[in-house]
Image (cartoon, rainbow, N blue to C red; front, side, top):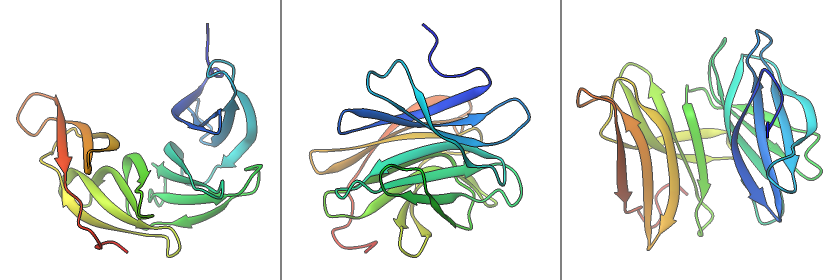
Length: 193
């Protein structure tokens, strides 16, 4: 069974209140981001056909807050090529966007139980690495707090909190051969607020 549309790459899917949400990006020369929803995880309907079409939008991570606000951490590959943070309330058809001012490849985002946000992805501002960053949605800003052992071809982190630690999976080629890594990170209690 085909899932999604031709020439649109449906990226990470996030479940919220029994509905699967995902952003897909156009791959056939017309860069755009599209928002989808599904109640069964197999048949996705378009909610917003052109969520964003400036700066070659690409991979995205969605997080839902307790008040049902959705945040979207978005990679862009065009000009200026900096990540964006989108925000919307139900029914998620009207979005506001903030330019984060840094490149983030393969973005991932998690909200901690204490309300802080950790973003992760490939940074390439001179030294290529997979890093963890504090995200401030109000200011539209990220601040790197940990460079994971990584380099070369590296990215696509996965994030989950388990037993008081942030578990981070990612791949990297910094040891010669591309491999998958798992880091367990103890987060500071108050830093990043």
